[in-house]
Length: 156
Image (cartoon, rainbow, N blue to C red):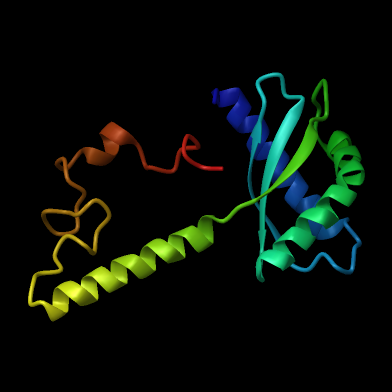
């Protein structure tokens, strides 16, 4: 995504989050967190990534509530930000937290297994398996070469 599209997506996500929190008066909504957004190149469509506490049924209900409120949310979005077109909104469940928990569980099991076998657990504590003092592999300037790892390429 280009820098402009990233900025517009962030602006849309931020404003939708505020609209849901402060202006959406649906007693069923519960706690909804907007985790991000992606916009099409022509800015006419936006995928909005959301999550909530609860099981899959609760998440599906959250999406139904948001789909029902899309017209209201788009109208409010149009009042808040200046774009030629207010994008059509598509709601997507963000399972990043659950996926991260599953990965963490697997890593914990691996650490436990390696510990039981008498093997070293060194390298499992740091992402990418560090070689020294928890620093990422690739030398002291690894962050400068690859950035902070918080870009939007792999994010929802």
